Amino acid sequence: EAGVAQSPRYKIIEKRQSVAFWCNPISGHATLYWYQQILGQGPKLLIQFQNNGVVDDSQLPKDRFSAERLKGVDSTLKIQPAKLEDSAVYLCASSLNRARDTEAFFGQGTRLTVV
Amino acid sequence: GESVGLHLPTLSVQEGDNSIINCAYSNSASDYFIWYKQESGKGPQFIIDIRSNMDKRQGQRVTVLLNKTVKHLSLQIAATQPGDSAVYFCAETLSRGYQKVTFGTGTKLQVIP
Image 1 (tube, each protein chain N blue to C red):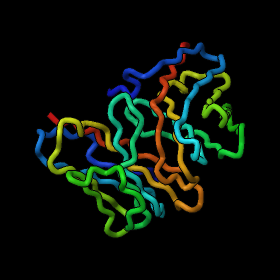
Image 2 (cartoon, rainbow over the protein chains, first blue to last red; image 1 turned 90 degrees about the vertical axis):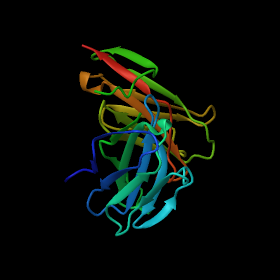
Image 3 (cartoon, chains in turn brown, orange; image 1 turned 30 degrees about the vertical axis):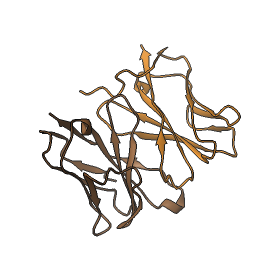
């Protein structure tokens, strides 16, 4: 079974530029998560989708971050404009069904460096 | 590669010994607790979880203990192997559907051959 796919693997941008990350979850997984992991810290949930609907985006900085999952499968996370403090690894995870008590599987992440 | 474990507390264990990784959680309303293992350059990997109505759960070579009185969680790894070297995170959530999972700071486990 293929895992959660993320691209790009690494990205370096200048502050105030825009960037987008892509995630393809495990086939059939209804729930998709985006996490931000700053170096030396645990991941922080940014947004959670159930199919193509948002379940929780309370920790998403909505003035600069946006995410979508239009067809309930792939998802993109965008930052516009980026700040230096956005430098982190952005992790995508998916799980089979939120109500069915299943574990989340993580991708390898996209390492973003803002200079 | 990048170091997930930079500036994290480190536990050094001799290969073959047992490891105990501790975690203090913050929300007394949390209902599920999860341990994740994260190797350098990879995403977290689920190890084991436990519901708040239990105080112990065992898996393969791992045991999780939960003490709700003092909001403390521990992960015990039996016969630690070099492949166990990683950063370990505890996480808490209000429901087993993993809604709004809050991760702890993490502990770096270093296995000495």
